[in-house]
Amino acid sequence: MKRKKTQVGVPTIERIVRYCRYLERLYYVEKRDVISSAEIGEALGLKPTQVRKDLSYFGEIGKRGVGYSVEELYFHLMGILPCPKDCRLFKIALFGVGRLGKALLDYEMFSKRGIDIVAVFDKNRQKVGKTINGRYIYHIDEVETVLRAQNVSIAIICVPAAEAQSVIDRIVGSGVIKGILNFAPVDLTVPKDILVSNMDISAELEKLIYFIREKEYGQPLSV
Amino acid sequence: MKRKKTQVGVPTIERIVRYCRYLERLYYVEKRDVISSAEIGEALGLKPTQVRKDLSYFGEIGKRGVGYSVEELYFHLMGILPCPKDCRLFKIALFGVGRLGKALLDYEMFSKRGIDIVAVFDKNRQKVGKTINGRYIYHIDEVETVLRAQNVSIAIICVPAAEAQSVIDRIVGSGVIKGILNFAPVDLTVPKDILVSNMDISAELEKLIYFIREKEYGQPLSV
DNA sequence: GCTTGTGAACGATTTCACAGCC
DNA sequence: GGCTGTGAAATCGTTCACAAGC
Image (tube, rainbow over all chains, first blue to last red):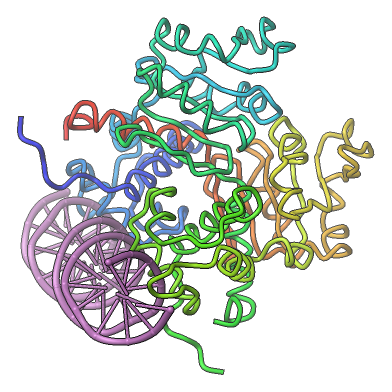
């Protein structure tokens, strides 16, 4: 099997996810038949050429002079993205049942997309053994056993920043985890064959404020 | 005043936030005196040249042959980033007191960074009038009055996807909001002078799974 | 010796320009 | 006329190579 040199880049995949969401609404709610790259671009704040380039990576889906069939395009993109079909293949565990962890456990969008969290861990013995949203809470000491038994491949980290790295080390030690979604505001050190996606809320806010200030005052500060 | 052509890019600012966090620990916890770009890069998974290039945008802070003074660099970067000094300038309101909204209201990292949410809104009359973590919950109908009175400039959106756009329209109507941090999994339509930062949790997970699959199986799907 | 700062080279991503098709 | 698909050009971001300074 020949390895293609030109893989599709990260920004494109991020936009594919957004196209997919937009088309979902167009298909189920607005019941549109066809859509143009110009209109998609308008809705998502992108240039039409950007939209067409992205879509062209996955084949010729549109009709020239007409546009894209909403149904065809939607199911085509759904086939490219992993969910919900493959989410059962990639089982997910959540670490840290604080407020954020609890919020994620019944996050509407997860269940809607077929994303299911199969195991939950905490280090607090008071929480261990209870169930939350139908999931049994394991103690962090059981991590190796449970992750292997359930064949979990993705970990969501919602523990405090100070504990994140030690939790990660134990998770990585289990040898089954392939990807980590990290909500703790620290940079984790992991073996480089494991993918990490950081969702750093306060970092995002700081970034936002930086650019607001830059826009307001022309210059961020004395540069 | 001359407008510089080369503004610092988004990826650089994202890394500056990370340097800042790392240096904070180095300064207060590990009490290091100097640090090299190589070591910073090691800790954050970046090449030393990347670190130096980023830092050089904001002046010559290091000493050749020696490295960077942790103290000097830390406070220098703190000066570039908006928090916590400017967070009072940029007041924040939160919309939607569901599980996620509640989680954010006492997110440790916010208070630690001086980020303070000054007003909270919900459309549920049962919640309105109560206080949560010391913040009075306003009804969404009061949005114009409260935002103007408090001079709020940033909105955090934690309402369900279906309601996000209508909430946004009202917020934008108030005329004081300059930036939005959006947790609802939809693409919002806003006037282009307003900055939007999306934190789409399920999109991030889908992206992660896509790239895990690509890595595992060489190709994401039949492309 | 060692480490920073930076123009130049390289690589990735976006945008343009236009051919191809309905 | 309209809209897509795509190579080429432009832009943006990262990495290299090396000069400058401790």
